[in-house]
Image (cartoon, rainbow, N blue to C red; front, top):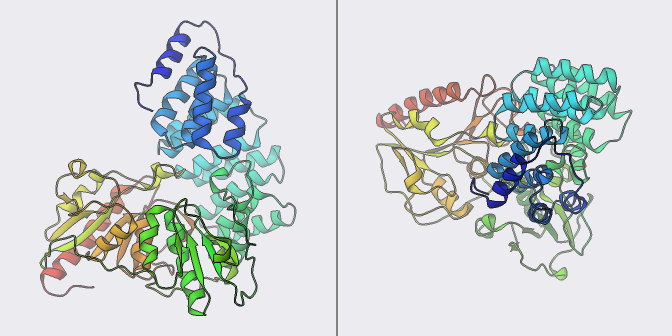
Length: 507
């Protein structure tokens, strides 16, 4: 939705002519669609009921929430700001706007709205948990710890607060305390939200067997961590839940982001190497790339029918680490496990260091405003002598690139194009998104620009990760500090460029 949304104008005009507070209204049809994760339909339905009510401002919050879930963040912000304007006492509107501002990386604004929601609804443990999460994301784990402990005084042993407390402890390098807290809670409750927090903390701490076991909770509906929910696919054959496959043919199912599937493909290669027949169902962006991988018997794209006779069992790709016993030792990391051969799309430049850059991930990700940056923030890297920056960002028009950042000779249409481009680079510099996983899976050098207390995969310290031996992690020293990360990347790039000019490249 754009700023010229005619329905938004009509609702705002009606609000301007209304005296008093606009009371919230139920919208069961919208709620049902949101609960079933049919977000585009929920947005259309919210707009329909608003239209039918004569552009009633009471529906602004419903439209804003649905727009946020559907990934229309700019429109969602306009609607949710209008909802708060219509009723400053509506805690749900403050929560929705606060969560949206967190996604956009505007943490001070997010904290203000979430705190206001707590004031309005002090009896809600989930609101306190949201607030703790935002405090942690803002780089203040001590405050998150205090808030979580205060909440636990009111709601003893509440899993929604034990999880954030453990994360706050882990962010303060108190992993033993965090794990002790979580394991104690695990003996008291069996709760889906808690198990996801438990999984995240186990995985951050390198306890992979326990972590991937708890991570199966992502397949259950959630009270608060809905963004992790992974529904089962509508397939006919039974799920593979472990044990010997024998001669059964397994169908893997993509889940979550492209990076998750790219990371999990190492296990598909392991299965194939033991003589198993492995196929996979993936979105269009992965289809062409994966059809070139010999360990995959068949690759099914979006909407393509999958015959019942083509497989004997299925599993989610991110269940493979648990099923195959990943323990973090690195024994399964058979790198490279993705390859791509294609015609050149970059002119040769033997004297220059060819560096791909990828600065943003999908805006649909909850914390994208924290993990992504702007192309212009990478401008200092383009000024380093002997460095040639090439855009590896999907969907960016050449005219939108900052000075001295080149577009590839042909547009990037999918991850096969990205792989072809990576294979012609000296290295890739990327935020935490699919191209970083792809470069690592190809065995190509990649520098990950990692936000403070980022994804569990990258741990919380050190430059190396066993997931991808060719990856170097450059970490924010504090929340939001991209300047330090880019300065470190610049120093390292300058060293690499000098080495290449002197005829002593490190790769």
